[in-house]
Image 1 (cartoon, rainbow, N blue to C red):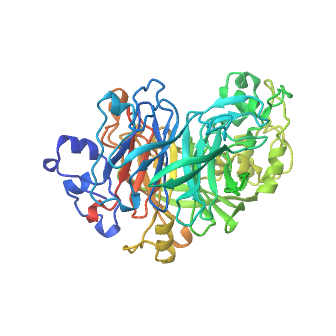
Image 2 (cartoon, rainbow, N blue to C red; image 1 turned 180 degrees about the vertical axis):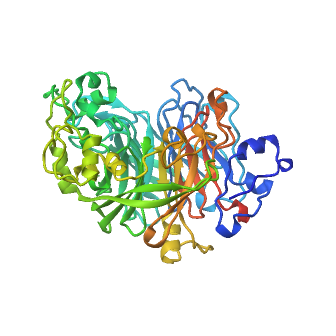
Image 3 (cartoon, one colour; image 1 turned 135 degrees about the vertical axis):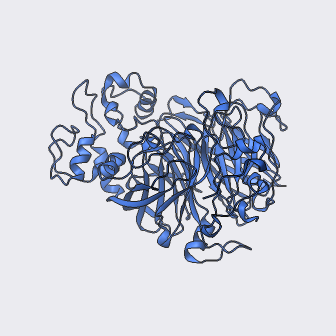
Length: 595
């Protein structure tokens, strides 16, 4: 771990910016003291987004183009950008004039916005942010209902207009990567995903065509972060719109009439209100959805039930095309792993949950790691799981009676090896022969019942660099001018709160960082397995006595959300924090090596 920096080497601003910084370094360098210059180079402010917005959708193409989004900016923004755009609605764009694969090692940060112009537009350290699309754009009728607008599954009436573009993933359609399709999540309940056909000429991208993907009768919800599989299919993550750990609320009419997510999802599934007493089947939602045939006229969304049902923030497939790590963005969430039976086929495999052991006698987030034991939850396949889901399609609101959905006592009976479901459990299964549906329909309940750690708070983006991972694990030379013998799965925690600091269970951290959040890593080993979690960089000390942005220092992380890993090992991290202008950071884990 990095020793405490001597105060006489730091200015007050640097102390605030790096108070909780832990540089990710090789074991043989872990005792080396870093200099002031090296610390300054670990976090670089690549860009800030307009007031009210969070940074989402960071994605770097093979050619080094960086896409990212402006999610839910303030509707009161009025400043006009250099290309004539106003950022008062959801925006998808890219950095023009920058090759992210050729950034210098020593970087200059963009300034903290001071003027109204800077606060209401995108300010970048390199290049210029160019807008590709904004909420409601029709592209000359290619998207007649407007980008981000979700209609019911019969395309009769609008359900919601989404101002929240999230994940971006680019799939090229030619060899040099100058043409292709940009897939973007639209995060709401119900949610959506767009596909823009884009082309690059004279170093500028333009949109040639577009569509909103049809998710069919059951739709999708809370489409948050995502990834592109090694075989070229987008993986979109259904996050929110659930009742968290209380699925039983869905068929309680008193709750349903008050919950806006419930109403809009029901409106999507049942546009003509043909079954007013029937509960919208929430077991149809909250999965990883693979977009098959992504470059055809009709991309095909396939819900991957075998990967478990919970509030998915993201999934990342390893280069073996079988092992997947998945994050649950909720209070008291679980770190999951899925191992497919067959490469490039996510329809069948085994689901695991992580059991953590915290470092002895350590509690500070910046210096405390965890050992991992993987607990197998169950093996399943999409076909069988879908048959279980279908049993909940036409249930009616219980109006105070027994819930139809699975409960904790069902999970506990299953974990203890009971032959039958308890009579006082979910109504659909009460007294019936036990099966493994709990593992895939209520994955957190099942993982917790088996002893996995369910204490993470706002477990956000999880990611690797495919080239670095493959070279480190398989010894395949893919990174130019660098020998990669270690690679990591990185993930962000937006705030270290709730179950992480409650002095109970497997995670018992101090509340020093709290809502400022931080980034962790897991070293990849043989067969792309991981068995250890280490802190990488944390936000500054959380200052509850202050208000607004000042609670987390502007020169350090403030609730990191999505992240990606570059070919050279540096991280791009997007914020969803307290700041008036959230930041797109570049973090250098190698700063202490002076490379």
